[in-house]
Length: 438
Image 1 (cartoon, rainbow, N blue to C red):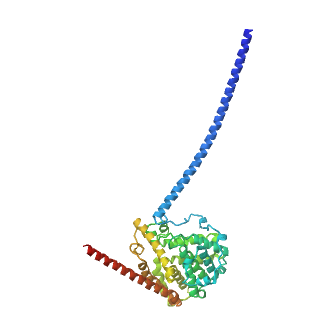
Image 2 (spheres, helix red, strand yellow):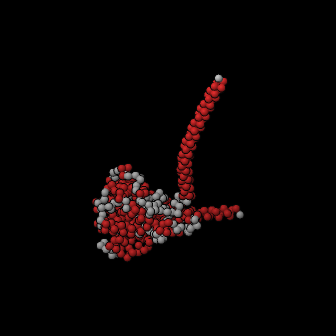
Image 3 (spheres, rainbow, N blue to C red):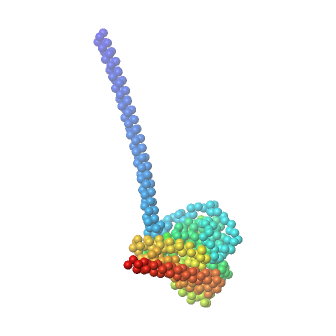
């Protein structure tokens, strides 16, 4: 009996032990399974954390790079590092498309007073915001018959003007308001000189479009700086009118976009002629070519022939030059702020040239130039001779354009006399003070 009971007890104990072992084994198996699952999930989470961490690192790196770039631009007076162009030619052109499309471009109805004022050099360009200037430019194209002549889509014209405005930088002087000034002066000269009766509508379209595009994406540093600093633009264009070549390139990058091509309905041969003519005019705005272009016009003006293509091309080159540097034709209260803007841009460049060890032009050096000294020579030896030459062909500009230039010259000469007298007085006072100290 005992042995039987013992056997039964042993059997029960063995069963229990086996059950416990089985339970422990199963538990261990489940734990291992759970461990594997947890390990896998942890690995996945770690991978995600790693990827997200990399993203954060990249974002922080980008932020730091942007901050460094901003700081460098600020320390260099707001200029771009190495003065590169805004768009590389490798770009697909999408950046040139306006950031805002036509629906957000408000429709302004110009008053009759504004319409008449637009035709005159006395037009005050400072009272208009960008959308209003865009509306004025749009009106000029319609008024001159250019929309009809070139069968322009009016919406394309709006979109093109938006793209133009967005591709002028916020420089102190070479900005969209300067573009508008030059274009408005061209529109005024067309009316004042009755060019509608003397030139073709294609010529007028070339004049207006070249004026609108003539300083596109200007970086705020002139050709001399580009060449001396060996910038990307100077290298690309072999030191030959780097800025003007760039303005042309950006103009035709914009026109290459179907949604901005105001000449889309012009046949290919006519477009080729328009393109070449616009390039010729924009390149003529390089002041390094001033003497050459004016001399060429002087040889033609006494026997000018409006049927001679070479004569007309030369006239158009002189007209865009006149408009480009026409601020002093305007009333003093309109013209004088532009001198401040120009000097600000000059000083920004000369400061940078000094910091980079490049040559500095005296007329751009804040330690050497004043408003009167900046303007007198320019008015006397550049503006008046050019406008007086144009006056031989169009006598009607004397009262409205040439006389204001003479008045401006006299104004700055008076200011210079006052400045000289003040300087002399300070010198005398300093000398007398020095004598007393001794």
